[in-house]
Image (tube, rainbow, N blue to C red; front, side):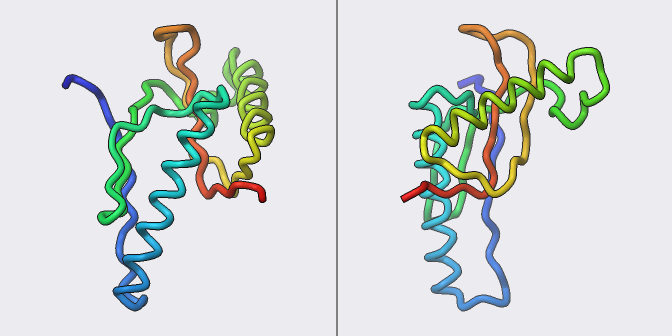
Length: 128
């Protein structure tokens, strides 16, 4: 295919009952995939999903080139990137998505359709 990808694998917790662990990993994987899809539909720049394997706890998504926001803090462009990260978070919140932590906000070069900044929410919840 020629697509650069990254994966997120939820690993088995040895201390947890295997059936419960399997069920929780599948549920959390599916939930994260749904939230990423919803965020993308609402205009948040998040990585494209390539594949989701709930039974394995595996998500395969677009790899985004470039440094993270954390890596560019203090550089000449960091304030504009921080503002953009804030705008993306605002779009998440407007979509009813609450994040528990942001893992990455990557800044790559310009791609198809403009900015290639991508936000990957960590622990996420949909507001009721």
